[in-house]
Amino acid sequence: MIAVVKQSATPEQLQQFISWIEGRGLKTDVSSGDAETLVGIIGDTTQVDPFLLESMEIIDRVQRVSDPFKMANRKFHPEDTVVDCGYGVKIGGGTFHVMAGPCSVEGDNLFEIARAVKAAGATILRGGAYKPRTSPYACQGMGEKGLELLCRAREELEMPIVTEIMDPRDVQTFLDYKVDIMQIGARNAQNFPLLKEVGKTNVPVLLKRGLAGTIDELLMAAEYIMSEGNPNVILCERGIRTFETRTRNTFDVNAVPVLKNLTHLPVIGDPSHATGYTRYVRPIAYAATAAGVDGLQIEVHNCPQKAWSDGAQALTPEMFEDAMKRIALIREAVTAEL
Ligand code: PEP
Ligand code: MN
Image (tube, rainbow, N blue to C red):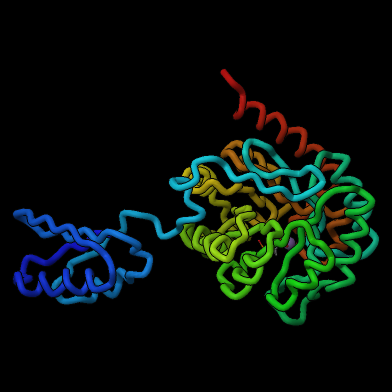
């Protein structure tokens, strides 16, 4: 961290500032130029609030030179993390896995959808049992009954399941049902007690980017989970809120290579929540694939018009099958050795 000291600062004020920093167990490195004086702050600066420094009379501005995320940082862990989700599904390190299924688990149609997505090449079954709905009057999901259905589908199809957890008090239930991947949804991306609680398990966590979350906020959310001891974090770009109103969200395609550069954690793309409309899901799935994601999450429903939630963005099994073939071709193109 570097503090730029105002020209008006007296030598006594500068010395006071240096003593204040060093009193917190950090080292300093002062360089006085003609135009400005820089104080390099060396050590674990995660404890130092840059805004507090900037509020000091003699400080002009403060710049971080090291990232606040450590465990998720590729600088300290250059190799890709590979998250073992069971049933031979390993996400990261050059593999590509697609999780697909309905937005909400609704009943026995889960089996029909699960069979179709597996036949088309999906390796993970998705479905929400606990649903984060904007309205308290909208369907809130089947709860434990939904988990039971997911487990039955997992047994039949021998594929891991991913489902959203919204409440830290549900962690034990998710462990009891041996949920393979716990999803933290966009609305809970900064629910710190929830992040910490899933961090105390070793179950893979699919962490979605917050509704208007920055890349750094996503990485700091991952840091919450990892700092509790769980290294099995998969990040998900699912679109962010922008000024655009023609789509539900805006898929931040930049975030894919940026995250791959900053972190060793796997990154997947969710074109369904990113766009909100069936007609846009496939093009954005292709863009995410070309940008280098380690996998995708796509909502698929046997009868989108009857879906309990997010029918407007669901692919039919036929559309999904078509998408999977094209995704494979795009992956070939971007990973080919030339
Ligand atoms: C979901 O996966 O159904 C969901 C609610 O996703 P998000 O948190 O990205 O909106
Ligand atoms: Mn959904």
